[in-house]
Image 1 (cartoon, rainbow, N blue to C red):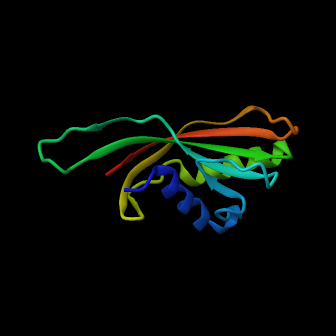
Image 2 (cartoon, helix red, strand yellow; image 1 turned 90 degrees about the vertical axis):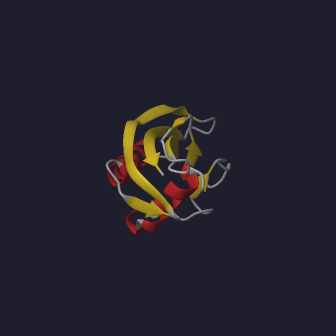
Image 3 (tube, rainbow, N blue to C red; image 1 turned 180 degrees about the horizontal axis):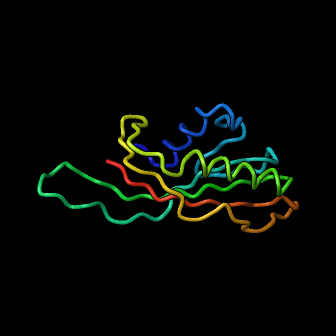
Length: 131
């Protein structure tokens, strides 16, 4: 099973209207210093898996944080809204062999602050249920 960040990255990259390309302006787990405008996904703290009576029927509760860095706050915020609208409520979709029963936005987009070069940092948080 992949990390949620890796799977959601593939979902974002497949949505061509966002213009996100992995290792160009879309990254996972480590935000590079360049380019100036990036979207980076991080696996977040998750809850313990559901226990079932049948061993192997695992149901996971995971989280992903998406961090948008942009030279223009308005552009970064608008991208955050697009990502939220794409992912929020997405369900019953299989990504890389894993069934995602629901993805929902738990917060965001929200301004986290500004980096040392004056770029806006906007974050969104998503809760995920998958098996």
